[in-house]
Length: 111
Length: 113
Image (tube, rainbow over all chains, first blue to last red; front, top):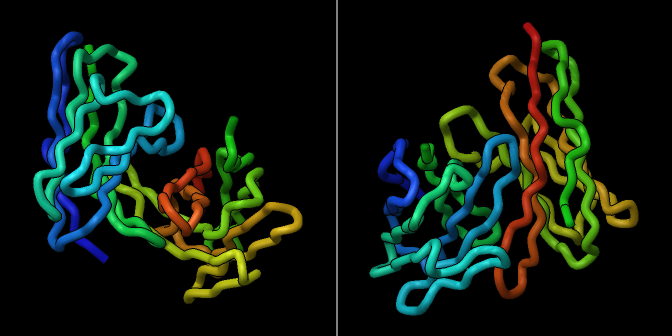
């Protein structure tokens, strides 16, 4: 398993602003994943981030809204841009292939 | 279109008894299935998995059963303990290519002391 940390753990933001979430892993990994869990909902995959290439986004998620960086094999960021209250969610990064291991999540509230 | 469903949003069980959590899926191409446990303010924790070539996998108090013909899997926890109280998610994936997970909506388990 991997040890994954995320920053910030929570934030309250105003609509129209952007927030960048950081994900740090204690070992080198090829693929990192970003998920969203809206209140009372399941986890939904936003995108898959490979080092050295552009992230692959799932249906319903676009790069302009959720730009992702993957500068090296242990780190990734997800930015939530031009936020609205509907973006209030828990955002999680994960690593692994057959069994994915998750970070503690970032709880975002947009007012 | 919810490809992975957990039809019971909540379940209460007495301590020491068996907890059975159920999960249904619609896509017969899924070939790997997992269960995760999630406590409040924490990320999901991997519990147990099963490949589509098996119909049962055990790990201590946790057993997962897979019925491919019914597109159904279940997690059995025996005996249930108060520390098992959490939200349980099942997930399904394709092991070739994307390793993309599709999660169910979760079942909140409460184990009563």
